[in-house]
Length: 85
Image (cartoon, rainbow, N blue to C red; front, side):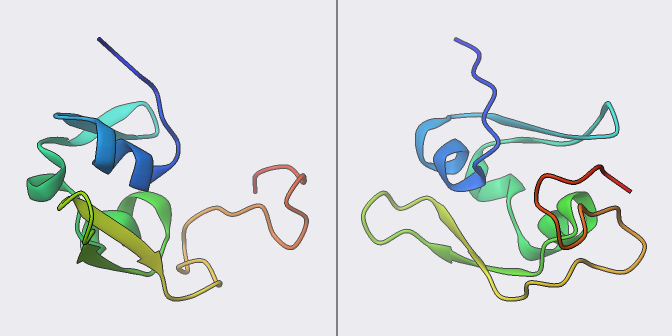
């Protein structure tokens, strides 16, 4: 089965194998526990986050720690419905 999820925590919890893409290219793939880490989230999504172990599922649990995007990566700005820059 193939699913497309944009919620990284749901993907980690329910998928056996992840394929992470950026700009149409695969940047990482494998089991969630081997793929998802803070560096991947920062480089791929511009997200500063801590990655802990979900106490219920035992899978990676992403906890955002900053609301500002990483410099150099596109964002939607202050308007969540605005165009990508």
